[in-house]
Image 1 (spheres, rainbow, N blue to C red):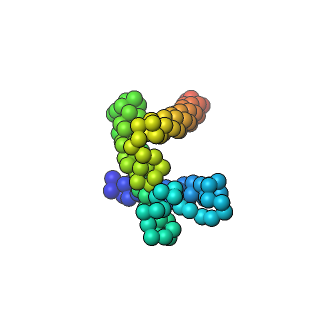
Image 2: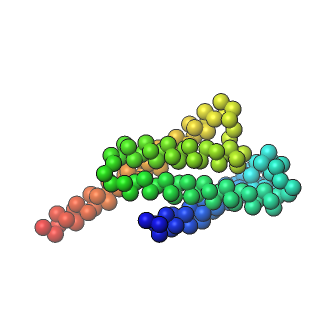
Image 3: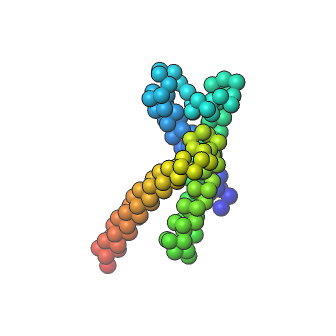
Length: 151
């Protein structure tokens, strides 16, 4: 189990950092007028320069990746219902991601902003969950056809 957790942490760091970097490049193109900024101006203002802000951003992005990578271990608990696994995964993911998103300057504790963030998070979660369920259903159907063919 420790090996599986360490693998998930490694994947989470790499994927989280990559996604964070891509988002920062997108944000820079759209809002920084040709300059690179790793996060929001409010976040960057907490640091003496952009390099320190980038290092902090990488740490936050890595932690975000680990949150989602490790929270998926919940689905390896095979005697739970899909509803229970999904509910626990959603709660763990949301409650772990929210403080990191606030720390990164992506959202705040303001009620309206927090509501919008929660709505966006939930929508993305549902889309990913539905995609995963459809993929799993397709794989099960393929395996069943293969088993029926071998009878």
